[in-house]
Amino acid sequence: MEKIEHIGIAVKNLENGNNIYKKLLGKAHYKIEEVKSENVKTSFFHVGANKIELLEATSPDSPIAKFIEKRGEGIHHIAFAVKDIQQEMQRLENEGFTLLNKVPKKGADNKLVCFVHPKTANGVLIELCQEIKT
Ligand code: ZN
Image 1: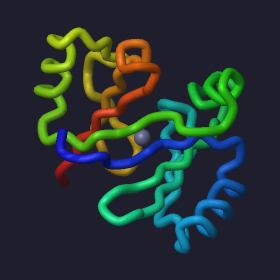
Image 2: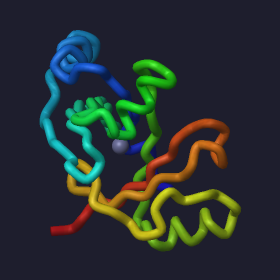
Image 3: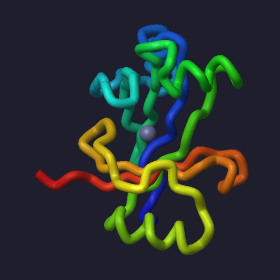
Image 4: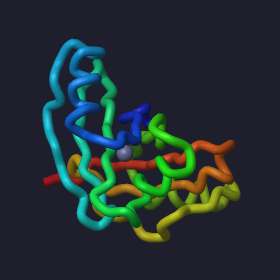
């Protein structure tokens, strides 16, 4: 793992969240992106070497909608940048972590991603992400 790439925060309303985080961080988000496969709309803020990702559900069966229903708005996941996602997935599986997807999938912000089940990581949803080289 190289660094914390971003922290994902579940919000009920992205526009409202963008306004709050713009005030908090002193700058606006630099992109908004919809991830259709996950039924989420995201926005990204730079904070030094790291990012904040806000996530809004775009349908009631989105994982974000379910999260907010259960736990309310708040920190949803921590994402770590990795060099070789396949290798890290194999390593974590060997260490006994449960991976939520067996094959890396395309996430927001030009990344290949894999999620680690929170039950195997002390209640925190972990995301691995590798930059897609274009
Ligand atoms: Zn994320």
